[in-house]
Length: 121
Ligand SMILES: [Zn+2]
Image (cartoon, rainbow, N blue to C red):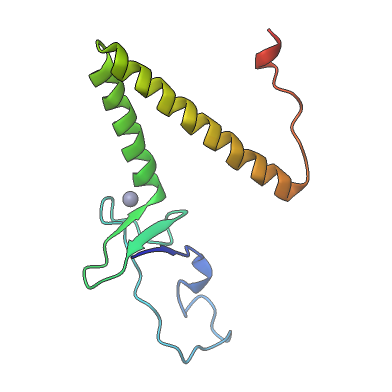
């Protein structure tokens, strides 16, 4: 089961906030990325797997992994037109998804961007 761990530094230490709410609930242990060992407070997101071994991966390691996979896929497809075409289709799908996410974020701000200057050349 995957679980996105909040990386709110406000819960970091009792010493930082002496008289604020004392929780009777036991503090959860600080989680670390299984790849780079950064704590949940040093990264934007940490995706953790429930279980005894507490496996987790941070957003930075996920982005690095995706970059490696994409670079490797391009190298492997270099002299294979069908694989290269599949690679291009995948990259376009990624661009479309990123554009959709950016538009959702813009909707949250109730603003829109001016038309792209790239398409006006
Ligand atoms: Zn990491």
